[in-house]
Every structure is written in structure tokens, then in C-alpha cells.
Image (cartoon, rainbow, N blue to C red):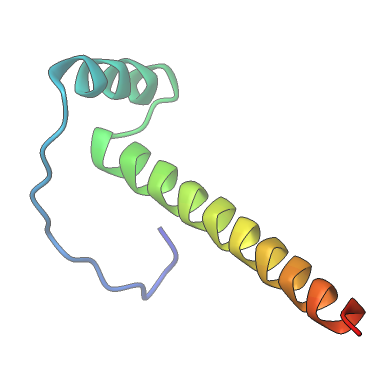
Length: 67
């Protein structure tokens, strides 16, 4: 966590197999499940933003190539 970052408590629902896998992964990395899930969500959000930016850039290029 970044110093000074505010935290919010949330309740999520997920398949028990997914939770088990997350718990195992967090344990392997010496992290709490909360920290591991937070990091996973942050990384997924970054990837989604990158994909959205690439799609937007592609649409912009296509629009500029039209006669």
C-alpha cells in the first residue's frame, strides 16, 4: 500500500475455488489475502485501461484515414 492511501472495506463474492487459489498465492508471496487481491485488482485495472487506450487510439487512427 502506498503511504497515505485511504482504504475502504468491501465485501465481495467469488467461487470458493478462486478464493482458495488466491489464499494459496498470497501465502506463497508472504502477503495477506487482502493485499494480494488488492494488488491483483490494481494490475487488472491497469491492463484494462491500457487496452481501452489502445482501442481508442485505433478508432482515432481509423477516423483520420477516412476520406
